[in-house]
Amino acid sequence: MSETQRQMILATFIHNSGAHPGGWRWPGAPAVDQHDFAHYAHLAQTAERGKMHCYFSGDSVGFPSISGKDAFAATDYAGKLEPTTLLGALAVVTQNIGLIATASTTYNEPYNIARRYASLDHLSKGRAGWNVVTSASDGEARNFGRDANMDHAGRYARAEEFVDVVKTLWDSWEDGALLRDRENARYFDPDKVHELAHEGEFFKVAGPLNVARPPQGHPIIVQAGGSEAGRALAARTADLIFTAARSLEVAREFYTDMKRRAALFGRNPDHMKVIPSVQFLVRSTEEEARRAEAELLDLVPEALALRTLSLQLGVDLSHLSPDDRLPEIPETNGGKWVQESIVRMAREEDLPIGVLARRVVVSRASFSFAGTPEQVADLCEDWFSKGGADGFSLSPNYLPGGLEDFVDEVIPILQRRGLFRTEYEGATLRENLGLPVPDNAFVVDPTLGREPRMWA
Image 1: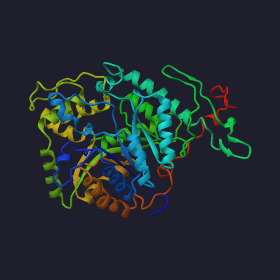
Image 2: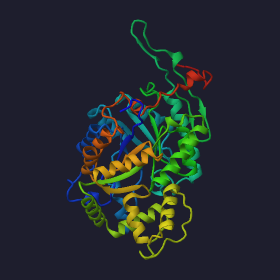
Image 3: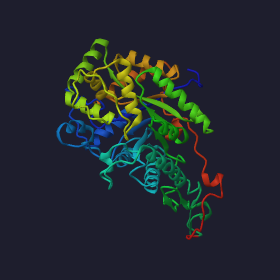
Image 4: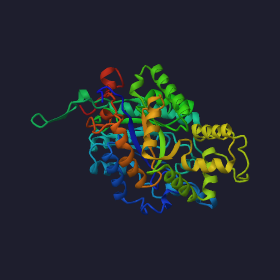
């Protein structure tokens, strides 16, 4: 293999009960207690054994309605441990794999998030990542004193300022600020600690952070928005982009667009990695894979499929027949990218609602495939080599077997082809992604903020 050969990024996105809504019922998998740390430790160690780049824990701060048919859609929300707490524990039982957690800019404050992820980065010795989301559901809003969520434009305007404040807080301590000079009683150098004195549209933050600059400079910023506002935020701020693409054509369009947008912001497009979400079901023969795919789908109640479709579209479809076609869907205040992708899929393929619901309940708008290890590896290589991806985010259908199959059967093929590494390249997630350490904003611009330095 050439030293300069481009290689894939591989992550695993862990849904607590499996990405497939029938996965928790899969008879070949052990019953999983979603509150048991040993379950997550095994998954993280399995991914690390496969030399995967990161373990990703998604999150939301709400619960769907538990009345009537809505209760079917709540499986993955039952036992959803707070992710940075979980990843802090996983940092102790892993050594190399990156640890990424979701936190909302809508229902948090910048100081708390900056401190939380700086702490995780220190505890993991430079392996932390923050998945930036804006929260799309009214169920989350009702837990934070609101009857409904903020409008889409307002959420993203808040997110833009939020991310900027967090990054500046991470910079508030320069490298080398901590002296620990016992002889001269100087624990830190006040000239290398900076206040923000930030006053913006949404936030007023004095700073500095009470945690030193993280080992990576900034923990990895991850973003998954596909709307116009989401793409703009990601192109300007993200190191890693999770996306959903149901075909190579869609993946290439998104990939090309995001690289173009990054360049327009003056960024090196190679410093922003794009990894589509995939669900792979791996079996030794194609026949076995197709049979397992059908058996998994049979474990999904029809009510769950139809209710999930309604939730993803933000429109109640319960009055329609499974044989009906999708009616006109009004724009909602939820996740625009997923809604648009599902509607496009329904129109282009002329899918009845029942068929569309069963497809959406498995993968939403992302790519799902069942096949042999060689077929899965071929598909990954095809997307990777044809400009559709810098790598992939695997969402295992059921746990732990779906992840184990990929690590044991598919990754060795990719390694033999020179498409994936055999060892970790560096000590931090940023190094393993091939990304530079960001400059400290206060060093680049010494006039940033106001500095009374009451501690000096």
